[in-house]
Length: 90
Image (cartoon, rainbow, N blue to C red; front, side, top):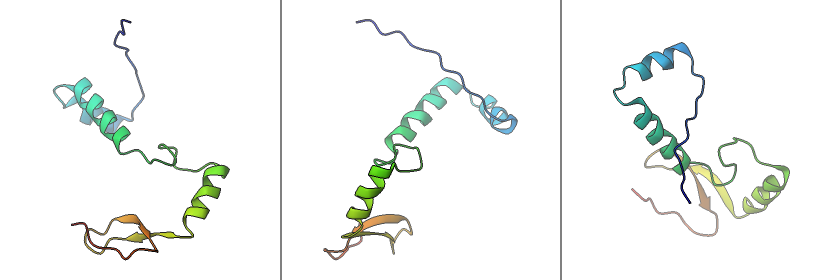
């Protein structure tokens, strides 16, 4: 099967357009930024920023043994298991 490249366009505000114009290879930069963003996507909401009612039910069950806490080393929020003491990963 032969897959052809596809052109995708999107709107940006003036300030972002100005910054992008200064980049020598805009297409490659945008491609890499999108791929990186997809790799960092939330495994629950998949980038939507909200959970469905069913996902929220599962999340509430999960929180019975876990909590969202702040790392004392890097200051980032993360999920910690309440059943196991935490050891710093840095």
